[in-house]
Length: 235
Length: 311
Image (tube, rainbow over the protein chains, first blue to last red):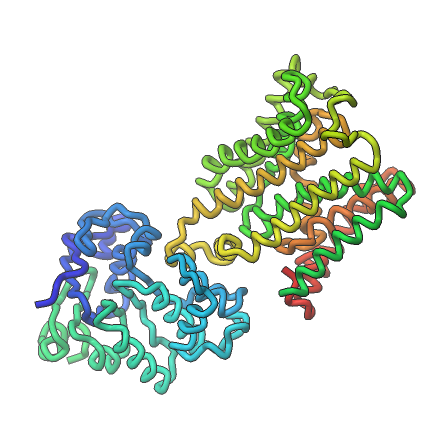
């Protein structure tokens, strides 16, 4: 069994009595692709926001790579190797594509910033558009840029929040290939609504419902789970 | 890229040449504008590049002015160390203000910086026995010299202002093309995204504010030594608004915008006050035209219309 790179114990987030995430225990095995699924409002984005440090938890503990990171601010978690890409495309729309990725790369102190940035862009096929203003890219390309920013941080753990939303089928295939290529060096935690992508990519799946873990297992186990079927997969 | 460097060197060369042809009145004006442009450049680093809308930069300018002026008057410092003292004091007060004010953002940041500046203004008045309050004091002519240069006479003064301006401008250009410059712009454009790329927003913004304070402090220090007068009016709210107007007019987030804005605004006021006592009305009208037709300022307007290489 692979090592655990991230684990959460009793992780909760309450908003004025609304339990967005309630006492979730969660283990992420290094090198795997782990998908997080669940109906709308199940607390998926809140849960990964707790992991990435964008919002503080109400209770619980998070350990990453052997250290307790519960109290670390988001930018320090990034420095330890947790990268997060946003559900709503969050790029620097007014800056050139090049600068968007260069910002992700330069923080690590690269000496060959231009070459490294161009290589990272080439990985997602955006290198011909390096000088374009990011906000003028087609939507699919903006999603790719967002993913490129996440990947070029060279993270140990990459958290992707609905990365394929709004992508065409051909783009989804390219995305799947890209994500498979970064494992097992990078562990991937993926929120995804597209079940084809989930079943195709994931080694492990966790199902959230009403802020609680409903089930965890391999794609085959999840598909066969009657509780999951009634709650989510629609029987 | 090299076009940008050539443009900056051309502006500096033009300013160098201008001193030989300008009549004395404009000669002094341009020296003054160059010093005020350094102040505006500092403001632009915080506001134009990092997105920090401060209403308290008079505090940093006045800190430089008073640190240098009092250093000379009270402790008998020569001009050179007094100037360095002014520069460092501007940066130090900006750091102290930033540590507290940067806990806020947006409108609150404007209000908190304004409060700090007002507190600074009142402090100067309160210690009137040293600062001579509103009335201010004159720096003795004998103290206003750097080595053989008598900075109270026109040619060396112009030269000193030009050196300061050139250093400020080239450092500004280097800064905006550096990694720190890119991180500053990232804060302005999308702070949350920057945080999730591993940047500590507080640290980047504080760094920008300290650099901004160093510029303002240097400008204040030079203003005192070059023009010989230190007074509390330089700490008043007008001197916080002034660099904002210069930057808006010339183009926020452009390296040459602060100078262009300072030049145009200075002469707009100068020329209109020769015609009417309502010169502030003319300034207001000019700003309205600017906001309506070129909200990014003159150089921002040019950049949007093809001159994308303008730094």
